[in-house]
Length: 278
Image (tube, rainbow, N blue to C red; front, top):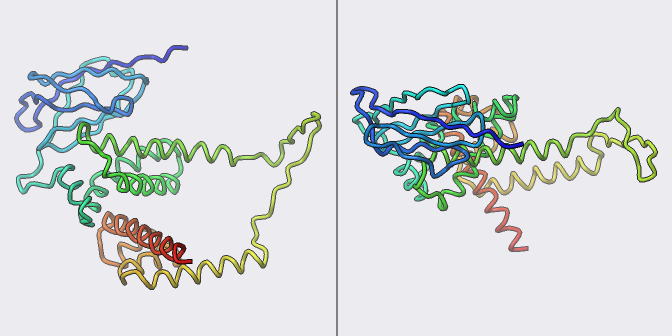
């Protein structure tokens, strides 16, 4: 069956003056390169799905994300808001700073797009805990790949694509791990067999291994700075939520998430270095 094509038309203007904006980039998951508004502010974009998320961006203006579907047959009126005159850094400026190791730039990018990614993940997986984990993973993967990001399309669209692919992998793995205990499985002879589901309880040997791993992790943490060591301790040993860590360390939650990601990277590097020495 052919996939229904979705054609979206719209007009982009300045929020305060109402003047049409030329050169605004309109992108989607299916069309990362996107289309550009003309001198009258008009644009038209062809999509492959009956529902999609558009990202509208223009230098000097705040990026806007808008969900569209096949009911949006009329021309969309989209107004973009300028960055404050105090000049918030653009995405590209923050990306360049982040590439140079600026942790505040990482935190600012995460703060700017966290809610958008989170609510998009929540619509897909339905569980807040899974959505939060997927959101953090998406930022981690995107930050690791900043060196391959090209400014031909909006950073937010690229970020959402990373998040979407990660969520699809998550769903695929979850389906593979799903097994009904009550439903019998047929063997090669067509006879029903009952699945043998192992217990989730750790045996004494597994408990010992787990304790050894915790001990080794504590040892590796000794090579981290006190700030990163505290983050790992609070999150993974004392199982604090991100909000609780932010309150404990008196820092914005975006900063906490960015620094925790960095702490895990450093810990991984220390572990790999130890293994190379063995």
